[in-house]
Amino acid sequence: MIDLHTHTTASDGTLSPTELVQAAVQANLEALAITDHDTFSGYDEAVPHALGAGLDLVCGIEMSVKLRGRSVHLLGYFVDGGTPAGFRKWISTLLESREERNRRLVEALQAQGFKISMEEVRQRAASLAGRPHFAALLVEKGYAANLQHAFDAYLGEGSACYVPRDEPGFADAVHRITSAGGIASIAHPGRISRDSKAMESCLCEMRGLGLQAIEVWHSDHSPLEMQFYEALAARLSLGVTGGSDFHGANKPGITLGKGRDGRLNVPRSVLDRLRALANGR
Ligand code: AMP
Ligand code: FE
Ligand code: FE
Ligand code: ZN
Image 1 (cartoon, protein in one colour):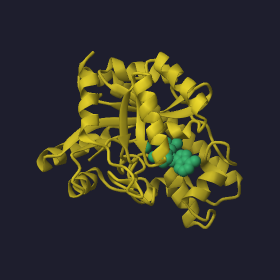
Image 2 (tube, rainbow, N blue to C red):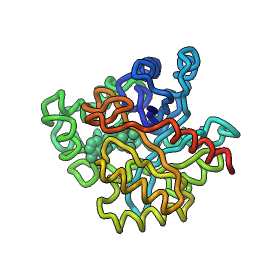
Image 3 (cartoon, rainbow, N blue to C red):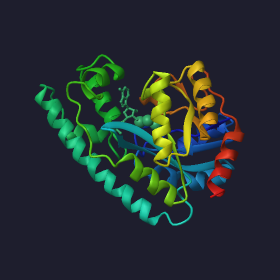
Image 4 (cartoon, rainbow, N blue to C red):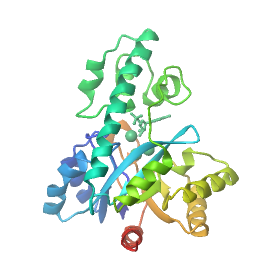
């Protein structure tokens, strides 16, 4: 079993990179990709620990990108080889847009009458603050019943205080990932649309823009959806990836490797094929 989608305290997970490596070893994972939002710092920190523990650690990243005015999540793998310096520099500019969004989000929540400050949000984040940290704060202060309620009512797209971020375009991000020697996979496509016809045409469009793989296995996908995406990837000649989207306590109910309700079991061969795809160019 492998897990190609996880978060550490470097973004919005609750396990440190070292703890996540330990958890992966304990869970007997054959490989682990760290895919923090907009940063490689968790991966970088985990590298020596994974080496020491004999764990196959994959360099990954998850980015929010714009496609037809909507925000979708893109996973980038293997951007540690080749000439990644330019890519990493570009990633650091994305962090600035996140800071700006966070400042505006605090203002929007204050305008809603909530007594919260940027300082309190930062205290909850080890480094990079994301909306899950805002959600935790809203719950702690009694403004939301639970994390999901905080997103549904105040933080999620289309909710009361939603603040859009200045995000890179889909094609631009895919191009930068692949130019750095990486593979771009669309994260949890089930969140984009649950209509199979619309989904297929959307994936065709993404493939036309350079997308190479689909995240078939994910905690938010039902068994039927996973079958659907696996068949669709084969039909569209796209690669496949899969992972739990483990965030520790920030996404309760998701187990490393196994996802929600133990439904996931991504085989090692998925990573082997992904590496072959990356090396085949
Ligand atoms: P950010 O990158 O700061 O915009 O936060 C994005 C993260 O917030 C995602 O990775 C999810 O963990 C979480 N998130 C975003 N939208 C929702 C939602 N509607 N419900 C629950 N969690 C969400
Ligand atoms: Fe997240
Ligand atoms: Fe995501
Ligand atoms: Zn994720």
